[in-house]
Picture 1 (cartoon, rainbow, N blue to C red):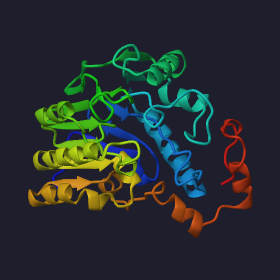
Picture 2 (picture 1 turned 120 degrees about the vertical axis):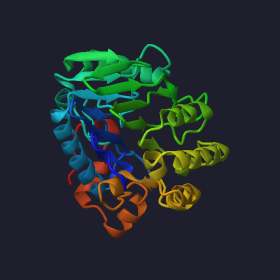
Picture 3 (picture 1 turned 90 degrees about the vertical axis):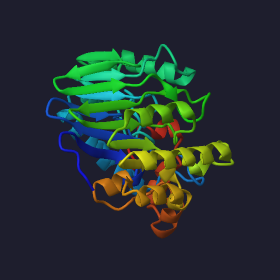
Length: 328
C-alpha cells in the first residue's frame, strides 16, 4: 500500500479498537492535530451494561487520547456528541471523563469547533453552549469553523459547511468534515456521515479527491429499528463509489457495531480490491486485529462473567454510578 509521506495519521480510538469514537491524530511538518477527542461506551446493548473488558479498553484509549492531546497544537470538534468531544462533567459509566479530563485535553490548545449557533439541533446546541462555557474556556483560542480554512505554513486545514449526521434532514443534526492538505497530499475526515446517506457529502468527498478518507459508516445494527433500511442501502452504494475513486479508506465507527459488517460491505470491499484500492478498519490500519467489543457484549458476558463486585456496581442508579469508577 502506498504511504503518505508528509502527513502522519494515527487512529487513537475507534469501534475497531474497542470503543465508540473516531479520534485520530494527524501530524504534518508544521502542525499537530487531534481530531474529535471524545470516547464513549453504549450504556445499554442487548439489555446489558458495558462489560468490564470494555471499561479496561476505554481506560486505555482515554489514556492514549490524553497523551496525543498533550502533543497536539489543535483539537477539533466536528459535532457535540460525547464520542466526538469531551464534556466537563464526571461520567465513568459512558464517557470515562471528568472536568479534569476535559481540561487536560483542551487547555492551552487551539480548538476548532462546530458552531453551536447555526445548523445544529437542540441537544447539540445545549452541549455546544456548555462546552463554550466550560472546556472551551481552557483553550488558548476557540474558533467556530463551519466552512472555514486555515493555513499553517505549507499545511492547509479546511472544514466543510455542515452536512447532516446521517440521512438528509436527520434529527441528529449536522457535522463538519475536515480536510488536511500538505503539498500534493490530502486526507479527509468524515465523521458520522453514516455512509454517506445522501448526495451532498458524497459529492464533497469525491470533489476533494483525497488519498486517504476516514469515514464513519452506516449503523447497520439500527436497520429496521431506528434507521430505514433503504438509507442503509444507499449508504453502501455511495461507499462503493468512494471505494472506486479513493485509494485508501478507513471505514469504521457505526458500521462496526455489527459483527457481520463485512458481509454487508462485501460489494464495497470487492470494488476496492478490484481496483487495487484499500479499505481498512482503524485497527487494521495500525496493524491490529479488530476488537468489536460492543458487538460482542452478550458473548463477553457469557464467556467472561463479571465479578460480583462489578455486577453490584452495575445495579446502582446510573446518575449515582457515573460518579463511581467501575471495579475492574
